[in-house]
Image (tube, rainbow, N blue to C red; front, side):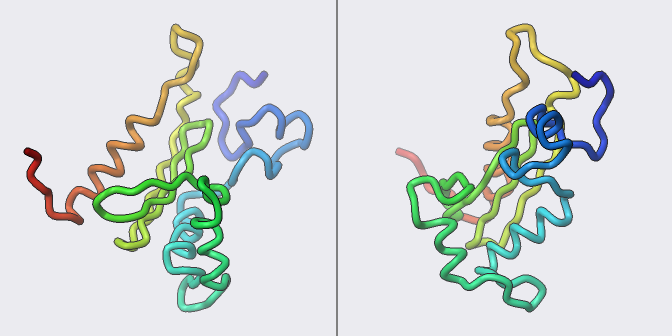
Length: 145
């Protein structure tokens, strides 16, 4: 439907055709700096750059009200709780509150087209390896028997 490399445009057909651009159903549209600010706001329980934007109880609702927190995936590793979200185009953001760590990965897996099986590259392994690498220095390894 578009045959050029997208720069600064929504890569979602529904948003493009139905709404002429950005629409809330298709996720966050931002840059790395602003996504990091959002993650830091959540990691610091509603405070960013010394100013409170959200009550800490509101932030807790994002993470703890449901099996799948509001808008986030939730997991655990030796560094503690991790909240994350991946995007269709190959984006990934994660926060590790215990370590005060925000991770923003902006890629475009669609630039290379579909694989021979008709699907885009699966980013899950890259996301897992990224988190494992970043958090491996935070905890003391334990011996496995």
